[in-house]
Length: 117
Image (cartoon, rainbow, N blue to C red; front, side):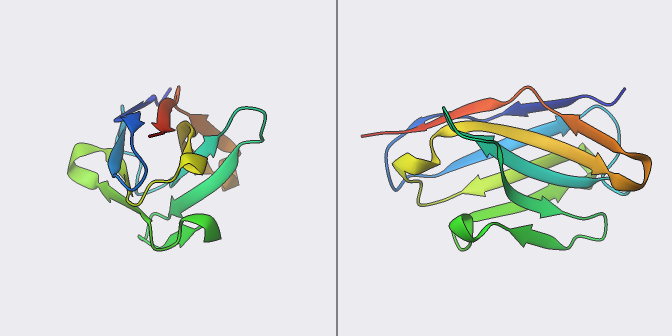
């Protein structure tokens, strides 16, 4: 069973940056669609960004121009660079690996991001 472990969350002030990491226990980026989601208190989990095995990226409108998804295949690590953070970005951020053809959907445990002055 592939495991995903997020890290890099924390408390930052508005306008600052954070980089989240998601370490996969196996080399899966060539066959899984990788993504970042977040869930704020009292709200549904929402998609932030995805990257396909071929490297195509897709972003939610509310993060375009601020967040960047990337990966290091050699390190089996997915990243989310977050710039210009706002208080409304406060949430638990989750790493996701999906392989739709096989109905595989994997989640990390989440990492808390808090943006407050």
